[in-house]
Image (cartoon, rainbow, N blue to C red; front, side):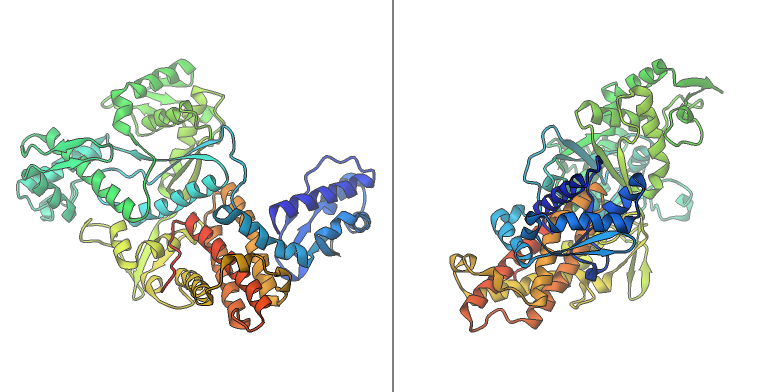
Length: 565
């Protein structure tokens, strides 16, 4: 059901309730029934109002339906209304309302499903991937990239001003270990020697590549446009550190671009220290009254800030006076708020679960104007990669894990994106490489792209002008498979809205799979190119509309709409 039809029906239902002299201020919720035979749209309004009005839900539903049937406006949308226990009101669209989706798609084209109004002062910052610049991106980062980029695309479709941001953790001990690893390789030390097994050094082959580039005095242009030169001085750890970080940042950026992803903004953790923001945040937290000294350490009273933390947290260590990792995180998120992004979403691995309460607690201590659930989090579980039924755990390039580049090389960007998006972020996920490259109905991305390519082939072979097609009589589209396909197309705007509200891009992926199934059913049961010219034109009109919506959906996932396969 189209949004405008849903809004119109909601107004009619509210009018019916008012006619019953029930002075009730409540929203009319309309949802698609889980069982197809229960209609196109359903309302539980009778059950929601029954207790307040001291009536049985079924009796109240009958009263409302009687009022609805007396309203001539409802006949413009609804063919039939039925009541189901214990008080659901189920609505069945008339033929005119069903085919109206074709006109809507033709009018809005690549914006079909999008919000028609640009939202004022609606800025959102979506942070994801945010990998340490110490090695290649792994498949967990790939899942973040797929989820995060799709959420950005969905919010843009909903009219928001979206900024995608990559936060580089380029400060801390792991960066020193990176420099030591490169230095060791530059000195021809074999880090795979058992002597180094207990160290925190990095052993992947990429460390050898960095060491060679540094010795050869190569230069790197970073994603910030800065040019970093290798001095070749293997005794200067700072020189090695600066070059190694720039080298890996460039490699990560190339991987992201091959994944059809370019970030709007990059933020360096190190800048929080050099700008004094971390020290300022610590001073502000002390002044807030939510800190205390104990055993030589500075603590934050996270348990007093109602963010769900089970114990207070150390901010400044007693051992060396350094800050714990969540302190710069608080400083970073305060910059998000100060930059005007009063809605922010973080996509991170489930191993960051403990960070959520601490960051929110720090922000609450700084300002009560910041909502308690700021920022919002999408925590995803890691991905298991299998081939021939066996798990793949190690990449030669990284030395310890399968990389994003491995995944793209094995299955391509489109399949990688779809498979990483198709499940809820908080569920375990097994990525079957053999399935992702197979060409059959069981491979969902192949099934969807094949549906698009097949429709496009029919359109091309028909070779009929769009003007003739667009003026055809769509009321001729009355076969079951055609009705089902149009109903599916009408769901698309609501699916986008639901995906945005629930931060659940897998809804788009699942909907595309269902739409592709309806496409295959339609053109397997009804020939498009038939002798009856008016019917052929009407079916081509449905075909063109379906192509447009499939393309819109694939675009939200950052996936290609292939014209040939």
